[in-house]
Amino acid sequence: MRATQTGTVDIDASRELLRAIVSRLKATGVHHVLIDMRQTTPGIHLTKSELFEVGVAFGTQPVLARGRIALLVRLDAGTDAEFFESVARVHGTNVRAFSEFEPAIAWVAMQGSRV
Image (tube, rainbow, N blue to C red; front, side, top):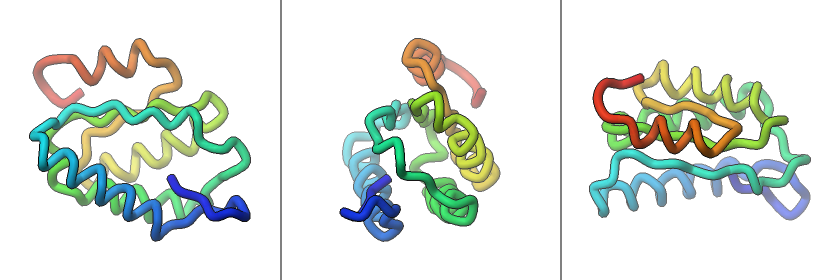
């Protein structure tokens, strides 16, 4: 997520970041990714409608449906991450939110079906 200098979420910059991630995945052919979001600013919280909007944008990227996308989030961001995960999964992306590195990387590296 991207924020403005005032600490509010910049949806347009966040969408641009998503486009950059998708472009990088297409260029490299990598399909399983861990995105570490633990260093995001603690005071920035998205509304449910913003989480939904970004979740739909994330979920409707065909390249993200090919693999596993693990989001590593701060423990205090868990509920929002789970909502985002649900929205993105409904729209086709195999994404999961984690608060600990080891389970996240194990899930990304796992062989076989969409779990």
